[in-house]
Each structure stands twice: as structure tokens, then as C-alpha cells.
Length: 123
Image (cartoon, helix red, strand yellow):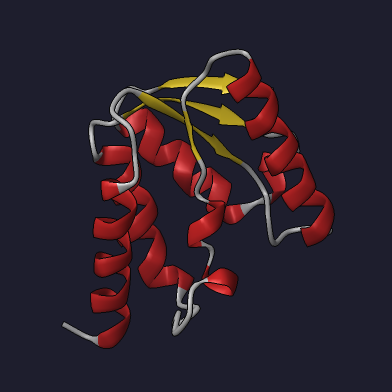
């Protein structure tokens, strides 16, 4: 297995250990558009959902920018890491942030969510 695949498989295993059963995820654009603004929107949405009692798994801690040694290989990361999260059986619904239409990554996450018949809530 090449190093990117090994890295993202290990990252997925770590994330799954920190993920609650029957949780939600917020998905949306991060790197398309203004990254700082997108991250604020993510954090605000996660915070608002948690205040309403929704159990939310935050993928933000697992962004390559924040993980030491990350290979920044999104063509490998999406089918291993993000698909793995959404196929885990732990995620029951996804909340989709505005602007998703311009994000290749978010479109892929929506595709994975649809394949798993997860509830999709467009914000």
C-alpha cells in the first residue's frame, strides 16, 4: 500500500474511534472560496447544531492542514477517509452548507451519503 493510502487509512481508524454512534456530520466547501470564512461557517454550524442537541462529528480536526505529516493527496483521501466516515454506519445524517455546488469535495461527500441512503439536510 502506498504511503498516502496507509496514512489516510490510519487517519480513518483514528477518526472512527472518536466518532459517536448515530451522529451527524456537517459537509460543505472549505477550500473553494474563502477558506477562513468557510471554516467559521463550519464551526458556527456545528456549534448551533450541538446547542440543539444534535451529536455532530467534526471532520475539521482531520483536515490535512491540521494533521502532521498529511500527504495532501485528496484524490486518495476522499475514497478512503471521507467515504469511510460516511460508510461507517455511525453517521445517520449530513448537513450540507450553502455553496456546496462549487465544491468538488462536497459533491463527492453527497454522492457517498446518497449511496448509503443517509438523510441529507441542505442548509
